[in-house]
Image 1 (cartoon, helix red, strand yellow):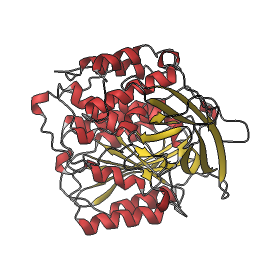
Image 2 (image 1 turned 180 degrees about the vertical axis):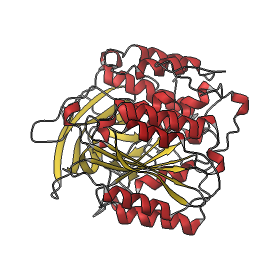
Image 3 (image 1 turned 180 degrees about the horizontal axis):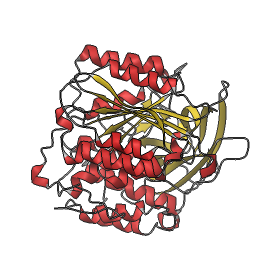
Length: 467
């Protein structure tokens, strides 16, 4: 079974479903429960979200298989997509918005959406790039959907970089090797030749290679640029606890250098998915799973502006009004939510990039709807990249929610993806949600779809063999 994405790129990259042995290791966390507001009025969540879970789920479905429930992170599915949120006011880098509407899968419940948006920058304003690719060339990377896919992606990236951008290539397995020193992208033939020379051999992870990659990035540092180490692997890191600790130590040491970390996962039999997710969280970075060339283009070309941080140390706090709200449940974010008693003085290092949108969905139970009071207040704190002083934004949440049919397209599409995530997880909170409900909600929200990803989503749901 093979499928193409909206750009006509083969999703399977020449692989049949019977050739794939799925053996991934995911974290398995219980879903957030409903919480009585009289016991806990505050909900705090980091804004650190990634696109890996959606791409992973998509690969399973395109191969005619059912994604493991542990592979589904509802918040990452929601935030794979960009939403049409308002631009920040001139003095701020982030905007806040909210919406409350009836819950379509549980009568008497409501859904509350919190939306954030990083300020937009034009293509001419995007910073110059200094990319250091650290590539796993162990034997397990020797397959079309791993190293060959990476090579094709790198060549597409090269065609979309400016002449003044720079690329370095470093490989690791049994040893670290500088395949391409930092090279300006006006020397395309030289870079393409180095990409073609990548080959697999050896095994294991070479922890010092990460330190070396950071040093290469620092030696070629671009002031006010996008300086980034990009670690590429199929996840077969073969790390023991001590070397895992070494990786974390290196990343923690380098996080203040101005060099960010991105981890790219390739391949279907990735046995260490959870570790690959956790590594970039220590380095002001992100984790992306690359299942096809279209996804590579999404990360590095179409949404490249996200690599330019406009907010650091970002954190959302929602304080519910117990006169209006009986209970609430944060959907997803199980690894990113923090209990109130653990947050005093707690420093979060989540970043928000230019043009990036962040969405959080709560399911809530309301009471005293006739009382003209706020449902709650959103407090958002962040620091601008060039400042040390924390900034705070506030937003009152409306008191009387509307019917779902009157909800905005942002809300309807976010709810469609949320319902899909609940179905994939076989969530006990899915209520009356169905595949048809997901399709109906999603296909009615295409007015804002700059890259066609919303249409692609509905096509994916149609392909899904579940209910």
